Structures are given as C-alpha cells and as structure tokens.
Amino acid sequence: MNEPVEQAAFLGSIAEKLGRKRRTAVSPPSWDRKPWEGSGQELNPEAEAGGRQAAEHEQLIRQFMKQLSALNTAVYRISRADFGRVLSEVIAKHGIGSAISWDDGRLHELQLESTLNRNGIHHRLWRTTENERELRTFAESADMGITFADMGLADTGTVLLMNGGGRGRLISLLPPVYVAVLPERFIYPRLSDGMSFVRSRIPEGLPACINFITGPSRTGDIEADLALGVHGPGKVHIILLQD
Image 1: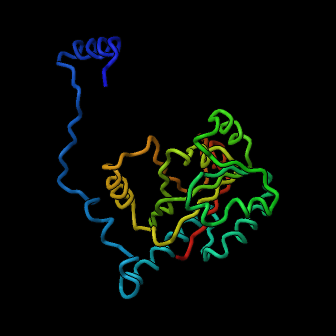
Image 2: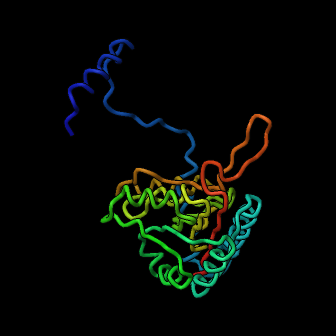
Image 3: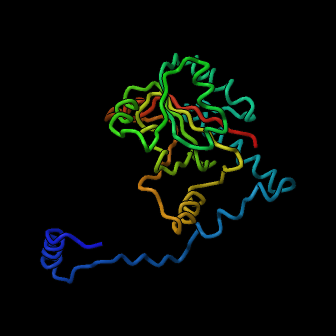
C-alpha cells in the first residue's frame, strides 16, 4: 500500500525530532514465558466425550455460571430446542418491542427470526447489503441486541465476540438489553485461552474489533457508587447451549 506523501512527511518529522530513523515495522517482544501456547488445546470436550476432561469441563461451566451470577448477569443452560422459549421469556421480562441481531448462520439455525416474529418484535439483521447509517440509527433505538459468542472464559464470566461483516459491533454495545448465545463446549478456563484463540485466527485475518464482554456496562464515580448501564447494556443475558 502506498503511503500518502503528507503522512510520510509527518512521521518522518517526528522521527527526526526523536533523533533516530523512522521505524516502519514492529518487532514483537521476546517473552520468557508464553502461557497462551497450547492452552487452548489442553481442553477439547468434543474430542473427549467422557472421562476426566468431560468432568473438568463441567466444572468450568459451573464456574462460568457462578461468575455470571456475581456479575448481575442472567444465564440459562438449555438445549437448542428450548432456545425460542427462553428468548421469549427474556422478551416478556423486559417488555421488548424492537431488536437487532447479527446476520449470522449460527443464529439462523436457532430460528431466531421466527421467535422474534412470534413475539411481535420489530427487528432487523445487521446485513452488510443494507445502509449502515440506517442500521446504526436502528441499533441506537432498539430495545435488545442479540449476538452469538465465539468463546466463554470461566474465571471471569467473559464472552468473546469476533466482529466483522454481518456481526456488527454496535449490537452488543447500544441496546439496553443484550443477549449472547454460546455453545457451552466453547467455555475455556481463562484469558490466555482467549488470546490463544485470537492468535489462531491470525492466518485468516483478524477483524477490526474483538469484544471481551464481562457482564453489564458498569461505572463508578469518585464516591464509589456503582451504576449499571451507563455506557452500554444494563441487562445482559447469556444463553448456554448444551450441544
């Protein structure tokens, strides 16, 4: 990619004032310990249907759910067949009238649109073929955002989202109620597993935004009064699918 002349001149000027040549590449640091290497492969519940690893994975699921509860996040552990029923309960609980969701095959398989239609919800998908400004405006006013999650981290109750294309980042950020759907087999122990997962995606190209979401939006003022939902969703629901 050709660099604009003005940009090259600006960065060159900064390097000159720093008394060195301009750097055009980044050399990654050399770490003595690399906890992310291999951590994502240590746990493979799909390969180990029973035995010790299955038991360990069950512990991870319970830890994940416990952390979510501590974060004021509702969590439902259900079969795929119950997805429509549980989502309908969330809709009724919060009086949802509008929703926006990822245009994602994993959500389509769950008949998400049919469930929203049955509940009379005005909804839109984040389709890349539609006007993005209109989608942004709709997301600002929607009552609920729905996405799939690529991974769950047990030690913090965090879900990881890979945005890009029909997986718009605003869906998990703007609506006051947020719902994430996660197959429980994708729950891993800790952040280093999440970084290992991200690292494994580098060859195919990373999206511009990767979200790590840990419960509702929260902030505290100087008097340490905690407020939820000030800068993002105040109500978060995680639906765990027992595949």
